[in-house]
Image 1: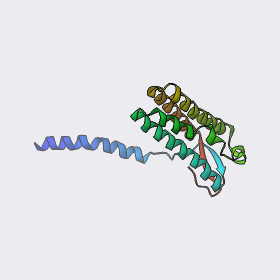
Image 2: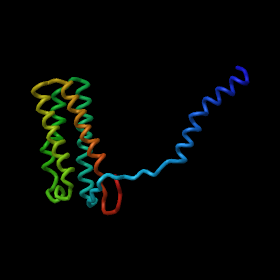
Image 3: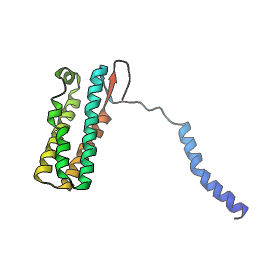
Length: 155
């Protein structure tokens, strides 16, 4: 390769890097504008445990759908249905903003609906569509709210 060709190649390869460096120099700080929900450490741990259960259910549902195992889809969805909502103490529910409670109840109900549909329809495509909707609800909630404990730790 000739010297001008090598120089041209190096110039092309470095061009995007130069642009990225400029972007970092003018980067604005990110402000978390989500609504803060301040909880005790124990309450926060309880809410996060419920969210992790949602995620475990979605993971189990997704794996079961890949195998065409609709019985496991139904069983995994039931775990995060309305029965799980009843395990949250009323004192904790009272601290939550209305929008958070509404999204939470809708998510529990969606898991129950998925369980019923998986049992009655046995249609993996339908359940996959429901899984996408459930994940959309999770994304929306995490985009709107953040949990804080009295010590100031944010999620």
